[in-house]
Image (cartoon, rainbow, N blue to C red; front, side, top):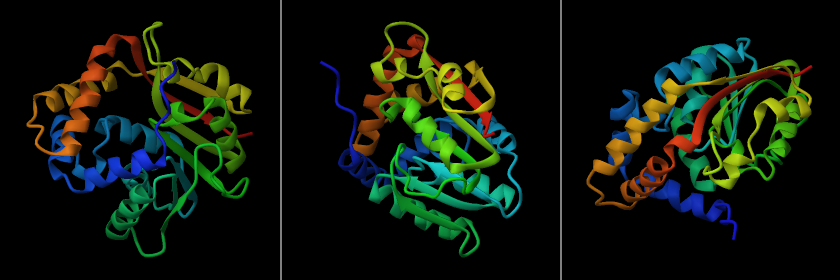
Length: 248
């Protein structure tokens, strides 16, 4: 039986637990040496490279699809001077993203709204750049999300996304469905580049090892530990990839 994909209710609780647990973010920030608001599993060089590859014009529009708590998109917008629209299907995540955006960006420069990877509700051709961090595998199939990304980008707009692909047949089914070299051209993108990033993967290993060794006294830390154990058990089955492409 195929495991059910997590729904918005699952992620609402997941993000609510995070908001009540500075300890969880501190574990990740310590492992990656990043500010707590960037408490995902991307190391600092990944954030820098993603920002550079988007090639955003100042005062352009950046979309962050599946933005979660918004930290990465807000960081990119802060450094590039773009406007930001973040989309996620978790209302709790969007509340947290809105609060962080208010603290980190000038008034009126960020908006966060409900939507999904395959149905953002945003107009076609609206964006100069689009980023998606570690989430495209949740679309069914991932190609449907890539087609939505292509729809949203203006001609010449840039896509930058991070995710995992299967290194062998032991990877979870939703990771086995990801094939960016195949699907980005199929979605209509040009100038497709897909790079493996083993150094990012090793940084991720540090996160999981630190999480498993931590005191699991609150729900968010326990959830991180569970994720860490699963990830370490299948670590060799996944490879870390970074993809960029251009809308024609």
